[in-house]
Length: 138
Ligand SMILES: [Zn+2]
Figure 1 (spheres, helix red, strand yellow):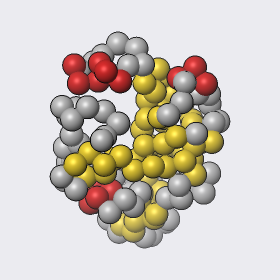
Figure 2 (tube, rainbow, N blue to C red):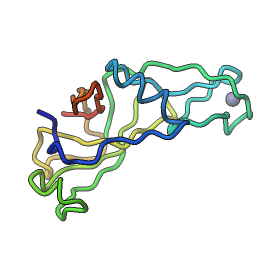
Figure 3 (cartoon, rainbow, N blue to C red):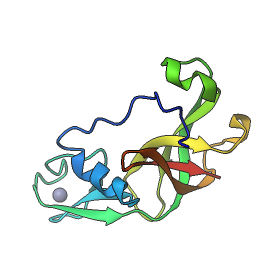
Figure 4 (tube, protein in one colour):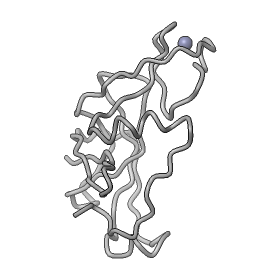
């Protein structure tokens, strides 16, 4: 059973995001790294914003992250999320991969206990049809 109800809209990757979501299918969280200058970036882009190289490598993220920022959602923006309220939408960053941040959910926690800097660990939410979404818990 996935974190959100089955009628939650599924990710619809753009052409630039397709590689990211292909790795997610295999429960591998990877971020683009420029093959010329090494700069990490997310969301995925066809070209390095730092040096304009089109060379792309994919660096695997460790499971350990920290909450950079967050909000507690208390009003449904889509009918599918109503049973899950309140829930936490967060931006997490990876001490081992400076420069990339990911928008995700912090789960299995009282929303009032979430704070900036909270250490969190990756888990994979199986949303069916071979798709997995990276989420985090304390
Ligand atoms: Zn570059």
